Image: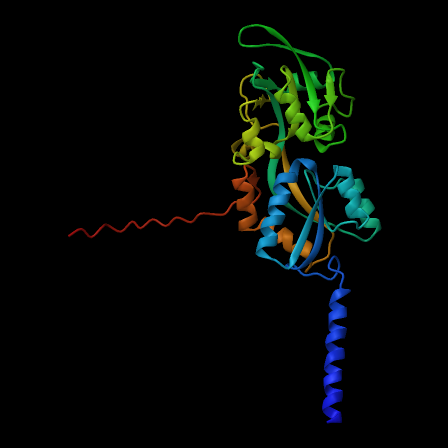
Length: 313
């Protein structure tokens, strides 16, 4: 009897110890490709897509809990550097200086291209402007731009960005203004949602934001504003213009096309690697496609043609 009692007591203590061990397990560190907890810092413009990908991943792998955190581009990179998160999603790769800083910590972040988006130009539906060249956009952002509508009426345009610290503003300053300051007719609001609302109620203003906000035609945000705003087609010259969409991203004809990257710290067999693999795989890529972005990897379709003659009787 005594031995049976001691054996039972040992089992109880073993179970209690195991329970405590699981309780104190750090799911942010001790995870697997399909379980644990993960923080993903990302730009505001990617909010709808990142949340949808994390939700879909969580449904498929219930043992995982992925949290999306909106931050500016530089904040995302700093969070990854400081180990405040294990993964980020931004619209560019790390610069050479940033790679050197990570290298000083013996870190070599891994990355994967996930999809293509672009900087989109939107205007109020009452604004009679449908096309702009890249040169006109440079002038709008740096100085003053007066254009004529289809009726020959002169229109003085103003530019509005989603936020002066956003990746869109940084991209425009780097790619179009060569680091020069924005002009007197260029203003910034605090968020993309505020920008969309402002453009919907402000004629002769052009808004600059990430196309990913309005790429999904089934999303409630797109449906709310589809009759209040429209996209401006952009051309590198004055002859051919392109709207931001999957087709112009694929051909590279839309001048402001950008690539979305998933960047993670170099640990393998972790939840960040599992999420990366999922988004780069068939289900994740199909999700980007259905939401209006161009997937970085498109599945091949193999079509077999049987050339044998039909045996008609």
